[in-house]
Length: 394
Image 1 (spheres, helix red, strand yellow):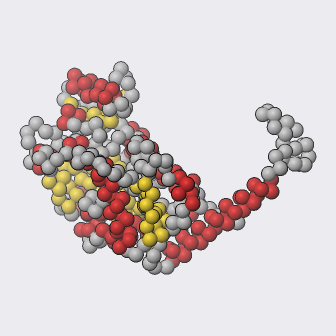
Image 2: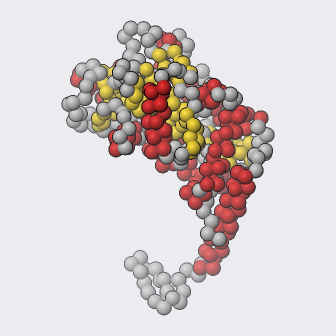
Image 3: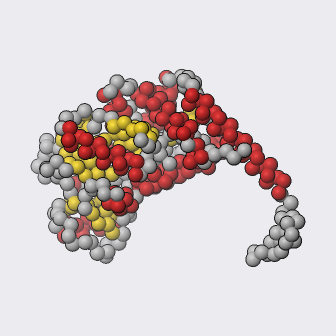
């Protein structure tokens, strides 16, 4: 029999496949299944025993010889090295996998014998849009890892799709529209002021004080900036005037814990500055006026508002299938109504960052926090290894 591609697949009676590789392919598949079974067995054994000493990889981005102005790159480097130190302090053997390496460490990943990978890779080929592919590589090489899967990471980057999903599930989020070209029509029922954001960037890239607009002329100008200068689609949201709350979450599925929330107070900003976190607020020098933003950890929000925020934050975390840890950003208007801004799966977890800082509020120092994330990942794989491409059919 000859198929449409002209390859001979046999004589129509099951006699041969035409390539002579049947036995070899079956042997390769048998070896793969045995390898998967061994990995599952090891994960279960680790989960059932006290974790004392594992071989943990750290998949990260390391920037050498970076200047003082490259604050984002400094932070990425610091996070990977800090996790390495914490893991070593906990008694684990640690191997670094630097995704800035050229060529990429694919062969090293394929051959590694690490028990678990701590995935804090945020860039591939120096592009944050490729972050989800780091988790994809770990799935392909069948390496268990911390944090969210590639589908969740990819979804969270696309703020437009997240908004649509939140609306579908009835999660409160600011009214919005989006455009891909400057000539696209914007819905006319949005209420000024509006905030214009790049629809698929992180670290507040492309956000300035001018991002908040109060009329159509300013809106057009800012949309052109995002599309033509930042080269991203534009997400246009109604600006919520009020406090911002960071909601750190750890855990999986129905066993999640909301850590102490952080409320950000903008009232001491100079007049003329909108109450937002532009790029300057996160990454500029200490003489920035945005250093007047005050953080209140374990903030007293009142039980009713606190419970409401926790509910919609956990719903968002689970709807987007976040794993192990994450951070949800919430805005509360003057009437006390909370709105989801976005979810950050695999948020930065340097020692001074929001999620580890919140964990410290309940007595969990940094090494213990890192160990907790490792344990959460191990138990997640034990519970459902097939979902993470480790299913054995031997």
